[in-house]
Amino acid sequence: MHASASHPALCEADVQRLIRRLRRIEGQARGVQKMVSERQPCGSVLTQLEAMRAALQRTKVELSICHVRQSLADQLPELGERATVLIGETISTLSRL
Image (cartoon, rainbow, N blue to C red; front, side, top):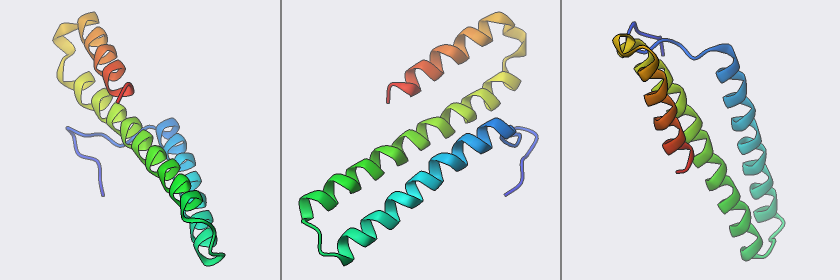
């Protein structure tokens, strides 16, 4: 997937943060596979699946925040400081999801 003029590539800090999150989720998935193969109690497996779901949701929010920053920062330059405030408000709302 390539960046376009309207949607630039993620910055290096965003990439590194998202990769760390995804690797943790990958580790959780391997842990759940092991739990199932070891016939761990279903309740324990469900608890770990919920932790994975929450981690995926947080990753979605982080990626959404990156998208908002990329999209709005370039689209609202005429608003100046107001654009920064709007982006901050939007990110704050997304962070609560």
